[in-house]
Image (cartoon, rainbow, N blue to C red):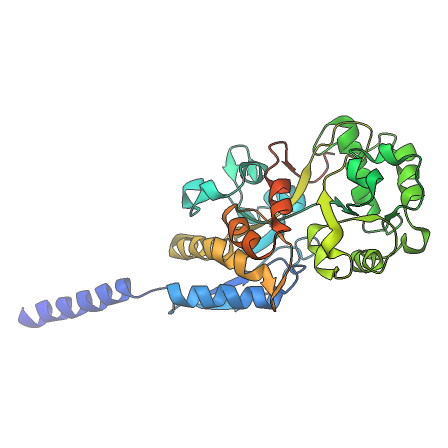
Amino acid sequence: MKKMIAAIAWLLTIFLASCGKNSVDTLTYAVYPYISGVDQYCEIIEKRWAEIEPDIKLVRAEWDCYEGGAPDGIDVIMYDAVMQELLIENEWIRPIDKKEIKKSEDIFPFALEGLTVDGRLYGIPVFLCGNFLIYDRECTELAEAEHLTDLSGESEILVINSKFSLNRPQYIHEVLADTLSEANPSAGDDVDSVMALVDKLAVDAHESDDDTQVALAYDSGAGKGYIGFSESMRFLSKRMSGTSIKTISFSDREDLPRLYVDAVAVNSKVTGQRYDKCIELMNVIADSDVLSSISVQNGSPQYFLLARNTPYKTLIKSFPLYEQLEKLVLNEKNKVILGPRP
């Protein structure tokens, strides 16, 4: 009897010890691969994670939400909300509870709304971006323009890759959205006249440039402004001090400000304690201090648009241009760009 009691006690001790031991020893994650300084971003994430969960190793993975297929074997992923419908339909990501997001009130409401489908939230917004008018503020025509059509009398005033195959569909989408006042309009409406104007405003020599070349061309003296993402401003040096950024309508109608959102989500196959740790990692990836840190690389601002409000307060102190970026994301009319409706 004593031997049986001793054996039971020994087994109970082993069971309790195993229950108390952390059953998650690694987590695999993949951030959006097109972020400037992606390796530095991962290093910042991993350093912060080691302070919180030193016994759980982070393993980097590569995954492209546009053409990477199912994120098999990756616990936490980052995706562009344009691909949200595909990810949900294929059950590649699972919804989370808003209560699981740390300081969710710091995230711009429109970003959370854009990730919510049928009342369920599919991730935490991290980065934002969009097509803006970046211009020489001494150029009266651009400083006063609210619509591209205001510039119909101008020619070759903008450095814009209007014929670049990766960007032209974006511009067509912008024209449709502003014309129809819909964030994600159906295709098929007539945009020929506005796109003809876009081509007219483009500086011919740079119509097929990529985004980096467009920014560098403007900085070298081409045109009076350009259409681009805010982070392209990191390439400016000669013209930076006299340059501003704002939204502009791609039609003769009211501008409907739309922003792309990169969000961090959890793989649908993750459950139990691993799920809890994934939520913890997602909160680190979207943490205000982490985003502030990645926004400055080698002492230079990256001019990212961030989905949280707090980092702007920190960044404005050193880089005043962030005040203009803050105004862009505080626009109450902002909508998230999702995939176009069928």
